[in-house]
Image 1 (cartoon, rainbow, N blue to C red):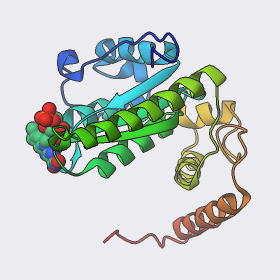
Image 2 (cartoon, rainbow, N blue to C red):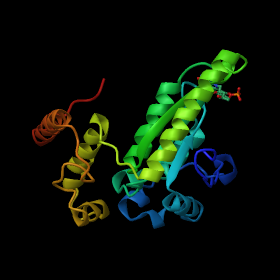
Image 3 (tube, rainbow, N blue to C red):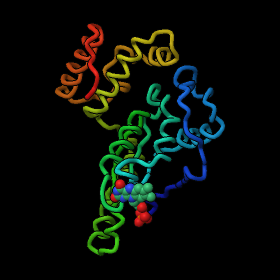
Image 4 (cartoon, protein in one colour):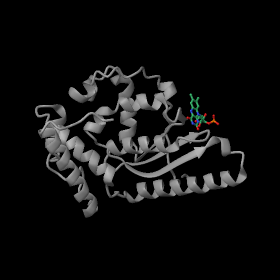
Length: 234
Ligand SMILES: Cc1cc2nc3c(=O)[nH]c(=O)nc-3n(C[C@H](O)[C@H](O)[C@H](O)COP(=O)(O)O)c2cc1C
């Protein structure tokens, strides 16, 4: 990225941060992030992320999934999925595996950064076991170059991405949930931003057909909820 544009990086190694497991008190969601028992450890990281133009979330594949370390970190940010604020912030997601499981991790990191409000502009999954092969390394370099270019140019041009189907569905389900929880911190946050009856968090236009499909699904969820017709997932 520095060959494309002077870029300052700051690395946060979760192993060194040493967060204990999130105990699921949900104080961050219900009362406010400052009520998290680990606020003093989390807040400096949030401040770094708030100041950054871009965020790269990276974690290897462990047991076909994201590492416990990264998952635990994301749990401390659950409130940000309820009250997203990283709009206009670009993100990339990166993983490495011996062989397989990249998609699960990339999808998780992508959706998580998206739920915080970021625009995810690049994804990269590398197979460590293939790094002895010259041809593979060349492909990795080309893919890394492409991701770096996308990340750099999205930051410089302050690009805004069209929300895709998953992002719109996530918005609608959060909206349904928030609308049925009046007198909560989340409800006030959403009301202040006029999100309670909006089509999306921002005014970036989405594709009409995608919006139509999402509105239909949202209507079905609302109706099923009202009629008490939600079934266990199997
Ligand atoms: C507990 C554990 C579970 C792992 N699970 C997987 C896995 O499910 N799939 C896979 O391809 N690699 C798996 N790996 C390998 C890591 O992804 C790999 O070590 C990492 O990408 C870094 O590569 P390196 O060890 O060659 O530096 C696992 C490693 C550990 C320590």
